[in-house]
Each structure stands twice: as C-alpha cells, then as structure tokens.
Amino acid sequence: MAAVVTAIGNRKGGVGKTSVTLGMAMGLSLLGRRVLVVDLDPQANATTALEAEGEFDIFDVLYGGEAGTLGQAIVRTSWTGIDAVPGSESLSRIESETLMTPELRLKTSAWNSVELEPYDHILLDLPPALGRLTLNGLIWANRVLAVTEAAAFSVRGVTEFLETVKKVTSLPHLNPSLEFSGIVINKTSAPLTGEHSYQISELQAEYGDSVILPVIPQRTAMQDSVSSRTALTKLSGPGAAALTEIFVEHARRLDRGK
Image (cartoon, rainbow, N blue to C red; front, top):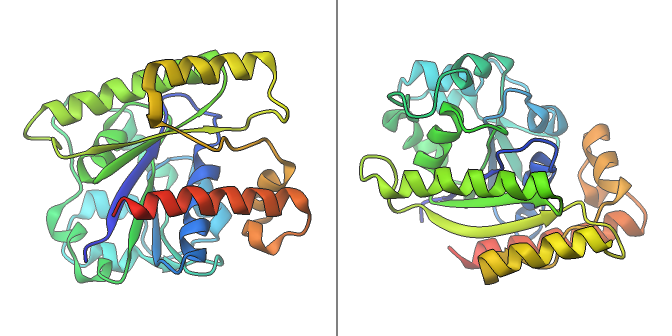
C-alpha cells in the first residue's frame, strides 16, 4: 500500500508545527509504522532535531527532479523508526516566489520512486508561509493537518492556511483530492486559561469535529526533546510521558484514516 502523505502547517510561525510533526512521527513509530519526515521549512528545525544529515537535501530534490534524487536524499535519523529528507536554508529561494505563479511541483519521477515503498506515512513539515513551498507540499499530500495555538493570531493563521487549502482543492490541475484531516491545538495551558478556553470554543464553533482532541499542553519536555535532539520516549519525567501518550493517540487517529 502506498504511503499516506500528510502536510502539516499554519500560516503563522511559533505555533509548534515542527514539534507536532516530530511528535506525530514518534507516535506513528511507536505504533510500528515506518515514517519519513520531509522538511520543507527553510528554518530546517525538524532536520536539526532529527540529526538528519546527508549529501543531498530537499532543495536538491526540488531543483533536480531527476529519477533517484529523492532516494539519495533520504537519510536515517537518530530517532528510532524515522527517516528524513533534510531541509535547507536554500529553500528560501523557492519560498520567496508568490503563491500562484506556475508551481515547481514535486517532480513525479522523483516522488514516485521505489525508495518510498517501505514507508507507511510521510509527514511534510511545511513552512509558516503561503508561498510555493507550501503549495508544492499541498499538491503532493493526500491529507492536510493544521496546527495552532489557542491564541487569536494563530487561529487567524489557521483560517488563512485553510483558505489556501481550499484553493488547492478547488483547482483540478492542483490537488482536488486533498483531504482535510483536522486541526490540532498545541501549547495550551493546564488548566486552560480563559483566553485558551475561548479560542478553543471559537474553533469548535467554526470547524466542529475537525478540531482534534485532546489538546496538546505546553510542557518543557517538548522543548527539551527538540533542543536535545532526543525523542520524548528517551526523556524521563511525567511531562514527557504525558506528551508521548497524547501523540500516540493523535497518531492512532491519523493512522486509522489510511
């Protein structure tokens, strides 16, 4: 069975999109799934956290497009069961172009290569922008998952991001079969503040069951995981254990959608 490709994003930065991508990847790995993370963000934070280093990166794939390029860019990471296609600061050269100019697209010959066959899930960590990198990711993906904080500007970023998703699904030459998998709310207070409760209720009023529960609480363990380049499962403490349980629950939901 072909891998399910899920694009993960938000228009606004700072919502923990990369952390959620890594948490989802870890959760899927704990379920016994083979996972490939593709870092489309010029900041390349997922690449750093996964310690994904190789001769080629995603910029080479997008600008090369030759058969086999993707396979050469896939590397093992320090996280069990997770491989990656590293990101690159050079991606900003692509991202600077406007959204609706003729898209580069993820080259068919490269992305359909046999190197993808072992994977159950491919997670695309999109940049916090609505440029050509995001468009390329949404064209390739089967599904899209939005990540937000329970804060006004972040919620607005989700709205703008999903408007772009709607454009992609409305145009037959882009990706009309792209499925919306829902919204993950990240970095919430525990217990919820009045503002967080209000923003969550507003999201639920607008998007209903597409708001995925449980919310992901703010825990220092998540920052520790990323900064130490270590999966949550390798960290001690109740915060890491609680986050691991939540991400496995989210991963199980994502996997059921296959």
